[in-house]
Image (cartoon, rainbow, N blue to C red; front, side, top):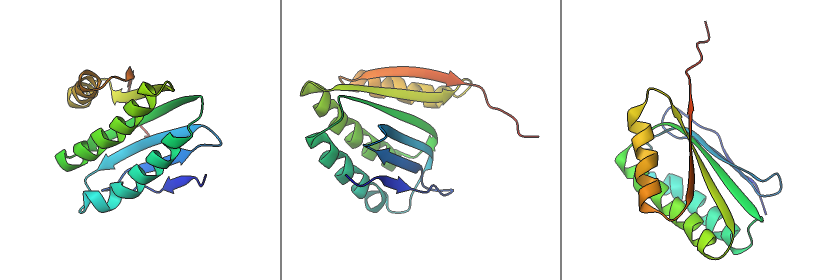
Length: 130
């Protein structure tokens, strides 16, 4: 299966899905002009992966910000993972948030409440690059 590697911009997240290396990561900001155009290839890749997933899938979600339109597409992605889990596959979501970012923490808790998935909340401190 081909690796999905999308370089992030100021408006779109970095996405790395690599079945062979067992790496699934989304990071950065998500406020694309056309949210469906951006996320449809991501959803297609994950749906294909879900047909024959690795024994354990851990997706690392390290977003700084996402808009409402993006949140709906992220939910769709999580729903694919939820279906994988219901089919007997081990799936975990690592939700990374800056320790003082209550909005991002709350978003992770909301997704956890909505979905039958194993969410692991991981806080981190902002590291200054002076």
